[in-house]
Image (cartoon, rainbow, N blue to C red; front, side):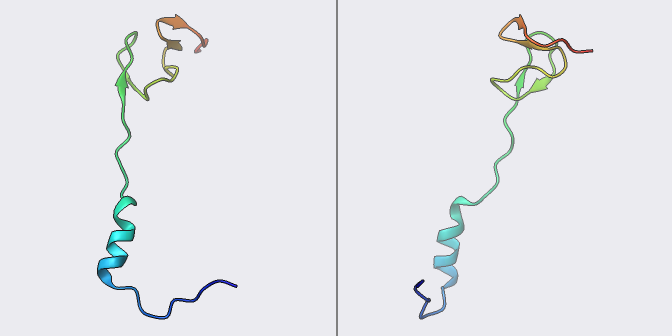
Length: 59
């Protein structure tokens, strides 16, 4: 069975536990072909290029 906490968790201990839960902003890079912001290491959804090669046909 699980161990049940015997005492209330303090504000300090609760804050220390949650210190790594903060959200971070999404990093973006600029597409070298069309210049739009994209996620790094991914195919550009606007022009279909990845590392100066056409890999997707965008309509």
